[in-house]
Every structure is written in C-alpha cells, then in structure tokens.
Amino acid sequence: MRSGTPCRCSFSDHLPRSIMATSLTGPVRVRFPPSPTGFLHVGGARTAITNDLLRHNLGGSFILRIEDTDRQRSDPAMTAQIQSALAWLGIEPDEGPFLQSARVNEHRAAAQQLLDEGKAYHCFRTAEEIDEKRQEAHKRGATSFYRGAFPPPSADEVERRVAAGESYAVRFRMPLGAMTFQDLVRGEVTFSEDVLDDFIILRSDGSPTYHLSVVCDDIHGRVSHVIRGEDHLSNVPKHIGLFQALGADVPTFGHLPMIMGPGRKRLSKRTGAASVEEFRDQGILPQALYNYLALLGWSPGDDREVMSRQEMIDAFTVERLVPSAAAFDYDKLRWMNAQYLSGEPLAEILQHLAPFLDEVGLADVDRERLGAAVDLHRTRAYNLKELATYAVPYFSESLEYDPDLCKKFVKQPDLPAQLDRLIEGFRSVDTFDLEGVETVIRGLATELDVKAGVLIHPTRMALTASKAGPSLFHLVAAMGRDASLRHLENFASYLRDNPPSEEEPATA
RNA sequence: GCCCUCAUCGUCUAGCCAGGUUAGGACACCAGCCUUUCAAGCUGGCGACACGGGUUCGAAUCCCGUUGAGGGUACCA
Image 1 (cartoon, rainbow, N blue to C red):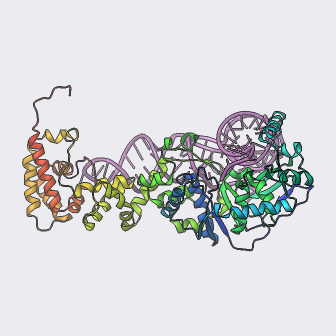
Image 2: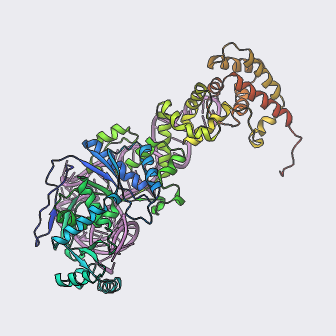
C-alpha cells in the first residue's frame, strides 16, 4: 500500500461513503499530541516512534502538540517532562510544542461556522433527559439515540432561548449514511449509520471538546497522517465528519494496537515500569528502548532485530505494522539493552552512564581508567545502574567482603602468605600491564607449585569483592597497580583477621 | 447490551493479500562447547497455526460461525 497523504473524500447520502486516500500530493506531516497529565507512557512512546519512523522514511515533518484542553488534569511541568523524554529517545519535533489551549478561540470560531452553515445546532437538553434516552436506547440494544430522540430546535426557538439567557451546547450534525474508511493498519473499516450520532463540539461553558479541537488543529497543522492508538479508532467517523464539514482534506488514518502488560494485563508500574522516564532511571539505553518499542508492533520483514535508527527508518513501511496487540516483555528489553551496552561505542555508553556514576560516587574519576573498567564489564551488564556499580572497586579505598562468599578462601591457611608474595610481585614488576600481570601470577603459581586458579580466584575476590567477573588478568591490568595492591593488602589482612575456625557449629 | 478491532510457540514475530514450507527467527527456559570464575559468544533442544464448519486434490493462508481478548459506547482525552 502506498502511504498516501491527505485525501479528498467523496460520498453520497445514500451509498456508504468510502474514504480513501486519493491525493498523494502534498508534504507528509505527522503529529504527536500527548496530554500533559503524566509521564510519557510506553504506549505513547511507541506511537511517537512510529510517527518518527514514518516521517523520516517518507521525508516529512513531525509536529508536537500538547493536548492541554483538560485544565483540571493538565500540568505545565509535564509538558517539559514529555519533551525531555522525547529528546532522550532521540525524537526531535520539527514543529512545536504547540499548546492546544492557545487556539480555543479558533476552535470556537469553527463551531460558530458550523452553526452558521447549519452543520451544527444548539442543544438545550439537560443531562437528565439525555441520560434517560440513553438508557432506553441501551436497553433496546441501540447505540445511537440522540438524533432520533431530539429533533434540533427551530430557528425561532433558538433565538428565543438564547435571548432568554439559557445555556446551550453545540452539537454537530453527523451526516447520514454509513462511514467507511481505509485504515493504514486495519484496512477497510465501516461504521453503519445507526451507530453514528450527533455529538457535542462545544460545551455549555463555551469550551471546545476534544473532537473539535483535534480536528481543527490537524487542519491547521496540515496534518497528512494521523497515526495514533487504537483507542481512537471509533472516533474516526466523528473526525471525518468534522474534517469534511469544515471543508478540509481528510488525512490518512492509522491505528496502532494497544500495548499490553505481561500476562495481557494492563501495563502499569506494578507490572514493572510503564513510562519512558522509569526505564531511563533503571539504566535502559534510549537506543535500546527505541529499538524494542519499534519492534513491538512492527517488523522489518527479515530476521533483523537489533537495528540502528537509520536501518529502521530505511526499512519502515506502514504495511508491516502489526494489527494485533502486543504484550510488553521486560526480559526481551533487558536483552536488547545488553546488546546495546556491549555494542555501542564506548563514548556513547560513558555519556549515558554519567548520572549513574554520580549515584555511586564516581562523578569525577580518571576518565581513562573508568573507560577501561566500563569496557571490561559492559558485556556482562544488563543496565547502566549495574554497570556503574561494577566500576566502583576501581576507585574505592576499600571493599566490604561478604563472609559468605569468602568462606572457601578463609579455609586456606596458606593464602595470606601467598597473597603477600603476589603483592611483592605486583610491586616489583616493571610494566604493570596485561602481559606483566599474567607473568607474575603464573610465575608465582609455578613457584608455589599450585594451579593458577588458586591465586586467581582469591585475587578476584580481593579486587572486586565478588566471585565472578571478567578475566582476572584484564581486571588487574585495568585496575592499575595502586588500587590492585591496596585491595590485595586489605584482603590479606581481612583473611588474617578471620582465621579458619575449628569446626564451626552447624547452626549459624 | 450495542459497535469496532484483533487471534501462529509462555512472549515478540515471519509466513497469509497472490492456498502446496520438516511453519522460520528472536527473548525466556534446558543442554553442550568455549573457559581461571561469571557473563558474552557458538551449537543443539523445548515449543504454536484458539475452536467448529465450509471451499479445494490440498487450508496457518480464502469464506462463515463460535469462543476469547482489547478498545469504544461522555457537555473525558
């Protein structure tokens, strides 16, 4: 399918109106309109990513619009929050952010225009009488009811009641006939006439409703593609009605499935993390999150999974968008993050690692040694938080040894003396590099007539307070002579302070 | 209730539109290799066409139905 641009729609009142992309001219313009009511949710992020991919693949513009018409729930601080989340993901809007609230006058004017043209009418009905009819309709199994139950007031009545100061809402006169349109991810979708109804576009307090505002702003922004969540699918007839009534081209629609949590539950903080910010704070790389989210509901068609931004852009097509809802898989994101952690340029990793180094007190340490340490540990870290902690022993004065992990070393009475010999060796070796270090350790092992492992394992424990980690020779070389000696000495005295006890009681 | 949408391994997906595959890949899980440990990496294993009808020589693929799931049904967005 071609990804078209705005389309002119034609319809008759009797036949189903078929809304198709008929005009492929005009620039591609997409938009992302979050509400500033909270952090950027992964569902929103996926929508933004899909729009981002589409605009770059087709060469168009990305408009950021803040849907802040719900004053109660909107918080200006969240706008900045969302912007920074998008920037972190590497999504740069070409235009905006525009505040929807800035254009309420235009929205009202549009409502007035529709009123003047007879495409909308005054609604004086009370919530109670509308509710009553709604219940009735519900019982009958009907969805729409308003249009049938309440004929629009006459011009005289309107004049009289408005003059009397009665408040009213403005209701859009939904065109008759079924509504059929082409959705980029779902194909042809039809809503029959009897589920379509007249709806409010201006509240009795004069504020525009969501439907009016989006359509006005999409027209104003000359939006060509409306790519959004499936929760908006059933709004399409309303929006198409409005686009047409306002004399505008109808954009091409595409509705992305919702993202589910593990176990098909709703995705929430409880199930792990739900906002971009949370993932960032957990030490997920933006490249990894972008890549993972892009693949949640889209695939390039071949077996590629770890893809650069450019590769994704080049491979992107709307026809490969998946129509079924996906469950978020934290394990796979974790794996993806590990892929980026070991694959990205070291400088890139270091840059994103900075805030996490800060947290563990390594804000201003020697860059070179830090780089060596990070490079050595990156293949075994799943997130930046973890990676930062791996760097700690390289700079700390002393380490805390877990008695549980050290049990087996404590049981070796010769060990402290052996470590002393190793310390000597490290002290006197000319070049403290990979080769020099290995020579010392292996040489000493031969001298002592023990396997190299007898020295290697306690040394790893001494230097990192951990029983597992990178190749020891690399570890020692990266850590450098000073820190290595310091930890070795500390560990030797730790062992001497905790001599092997005579058969400890079984209960501890 | 009514409307819309969706349905392949536990999860993400390829294959479907243009019926014929040992139904492919990835995560997770298991085993082996590698190895000074742990990862990584490599090799292998496990594991799916929701169900029922039709059409057809032949159906994951086309049609109908059922079931299940998600969304909507506002003077919320």
